[in-house]
Image 1 (spheres, rainbow, N blue to C red):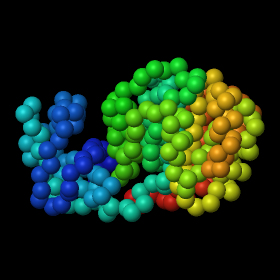
Image 2 (image 1 turned 90 degrees about the vertical axis):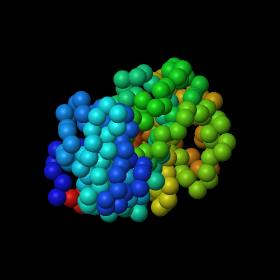
Image 3 (image 1 turned 30 degrees about the horizontal axis):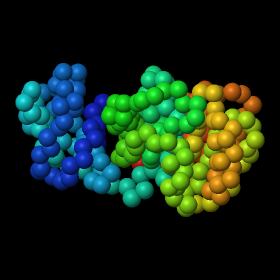
Image 4 (image 1 turned 135 degrees about the vertical axis):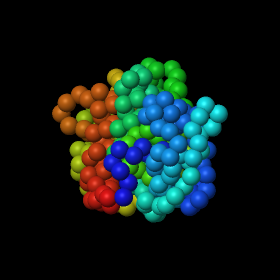
Length: 251
């Protein structure tokens, strides 16, 4: 049984008994300089394809850090997380980091930043956000890491939208159905949530969204929510009503 405090690291490499895994520099620094681990210490590694494995540090140093894979702790799960995307307008750095971390903990499968008419943030560091997602996946005992895409203009994303995926738009004007009612009516299949920037969507954007057959506009209650609060509240409702909150932890 894995110790509660055993660190978990995401690795893309294949995992099987006896093979060696070379860690990335940031992971090696974390074990060596933050945790002060040495050779022989136990680490868990995971990915969607191969599950989770107990490893032992074979070599740790500034040149390279290698792990030896010993035994499997968890089998791969065919459906680790529900097929839920979160589309969000980039916001300031600190709340955006928090949004990525918590959306990962809540089981979002895809994170898609979109530029809207009222988006104020002009650029984001995708690699930094991806690192936050990986860390949150490790902490929350996921086997998967959500896909984080490069930012894209909302109109271009919608033009190439997969018709089989429902898009739930969080409409701050109050024109949509309550999100709990909409979530209860969702048919099985892939779904996405769209949350606008601080200040909300432009009227032309809401008009265009309302004309799309795959879009459902929803409200999030009587109060005005910050963008990051709205996103996570909507994810939590979907996960509770139409998502994976009926599942239980396997360990």
